[in-house]
Amino acid sequence: MATLAPEAPARAVDPLDVSRAELYRDDSWHAPFAELRAKGGIHYTEHSDFGAYWSVASYKPLVEVESLPELYSSHAGGITLADFQEGVDVKMPMFIAMDRPKHTGQRRTVAPAFTPSEIARLNATVRQRTGELLDAMPVGESFDWVDKVSIELSTQMLAILFDFPWEDRRKLTFWSDWAGDIERIKTPELRQQRLVHLFECASYFTDLWNAKVGKEKTPDLISMMIHSDAMAEMRQHEYLGNLILLIVGGNDTTRNSMSAYAWGLDQFPDERAKLEADPGLAANATQELIRWQTPLSHMRRTAKADTELRGHKIRAGDKLALWYVSANRDESVFEDADSICVDRSNARRHLAFGHGIHRCVGARLAELQISILIEEMAKRRLRVNVQGAPERIAGCFVHGYRRLPVELSRY
Image 1 (cartoon, helix red, strand yellow):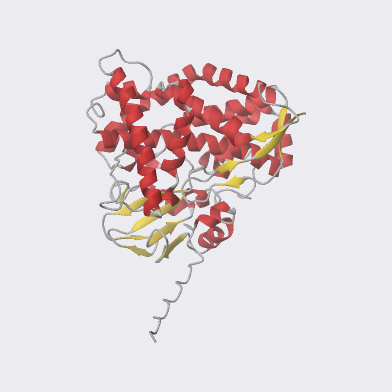
Image 2 (cartoon, one colour; image 1 turned 90 degrees about the vertical axis):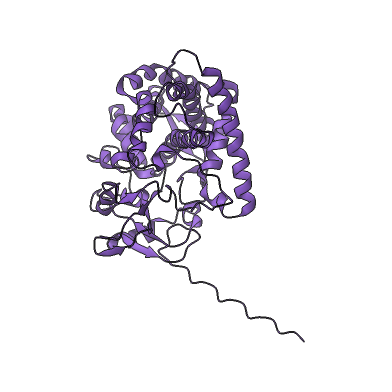
């Protein structure tokens, strides 16, 4: 009778492996990160679903890493904990995952879409569309805030930025969800599905690109790329990579902060009352909600040389996860950091947009959209009342919500 080989012993789970999807699905990430920060904010996880990596979870060491882009590369390993697999994945270069000097030229190409003058130009459009959407929302009836408000407003803005066909704008949400969910790279089947959807995205945007070639420059991102030296000759995979960057960046930051407005203020009714009593706090409350939510949990860097980070020996090739979601709860910087405080004096110090050369190029536009939503809700004296627990995204990259049942009331 054949003897069965003994099963390999189960690998012990590192309790400080904060890449585990269930921590974010269940909103149970607070405790391990608090422990990490208490131990200095730097920790090496040898075994995870994404391989070995360093966690950088406190404010000051994270800023230190971000401030040394020549040493800690965005290009060498990409910007997420998920590694590129040769023969399986397709390289999609994007400027956030580039080092200088190439990063500089490509970032400068799209930056004019987000200048103060351009933000001022978009103000009226954002305010009009936000008001129209809120006026169409039912009062006293349950609906999904994520779908009807957060996704719709962020997707409308993306469609304007790309001069994207209005009737197809929800494709942007669909592509963003597939691109930003790094859990979907864990099986060959999902990897393949993801590639199929991303190439659908590439095909659609290639048609949009071709329709603008040879035409006068217009104030949209595709036309800006066509009329720039740095991006005019991009190959298809590089074009797709930069599109994915702009779609995910434009969708997820705004969308999940808008959802945090609904969910977070319901959890802190005294702060909601403070904001309702003084709508002039909208701009500061916007910064606080972005800090409290932190829509992208981490970015990755890869060490280009042996070095030392606050007493820890980092070797060339090591990957580091910069946990913005934890640094924004660092008690040494933000008092009572787990609470929302709409008039927090240093809310703008948050790291949700990153730090240094890779700080989010569209930060001002995200802030505009969120603050206008708060202001337009106040004008209508509308309050969001949460009707049940949110369904959260199960993953360690995009930190957000899939569904949130709410009901609107007047105050």
